[in-house]
Image (cartoon, rainbow, N blue to C red):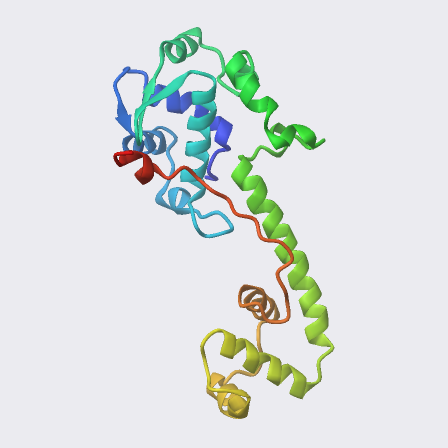
Length: 229
C-alpha cells in the first residue's frame, strides 16, 4: 500500500502514545508501522530527493502538527508523550484531522504564519507535508529542465554529442580528457544512450546548466542543544 498522507498519521500516532508513557521516536514509528500494516517497501520508500524516507518525513510532520495543537509533547529530545488534551481527543472518538486541530488556538497561530496560506492551493488540497510540497516542486522543475535539455541535445551533431558525453563523464570523474573521447565511448560498448538518464546526469553534474537559485532547508541541531551552553 502507499504510505498514508501525513495527516492520516494523527490518530494512530496518538493511539501509539495513549498509555501516557514516554516513548522514543523509533518505538513510536515501529508501533505506527505495525498498526497501519505498512510493509518494508512502504517504510523504505524515499522522497524524490533520496535523502529521507516518505514514512519518516510524514510521521515527523504529524508529530509536529499534533504538538502545535497541544496534543503531544516532547519531554526530552527524540521522545514523545501524549498530553491530557491528546487523551481527551482520543476519548472523544472524533476523527483527528486538520479540521479537528483547527479547534486549538495554538495550532491556528502556527498555521497563520505558514506560507501555504498565501497560496490558492492550500496544503489540505495538496495532501502533502510542507517538505513534500518543496520536493514535488523541485521534481517538476527538474523534469521541465530535463525536457529542455533533451531538445538541445537532439540538435547536436554526432561529434557534438560525443563531446557532450565526454564532458559529462569527466564531470562524473571518468576519463582523462577530450583526447580520450574514442577510448571512453568504446569502453561503453553501447549502441545508444538513454536520453532521460543522460539529461538527469547533466543536471546533477552541472553540465549544460547553471544554478539559478539555491535554497537551504534547515532543521534544529539537536546536538547543539544537548551540549552545555
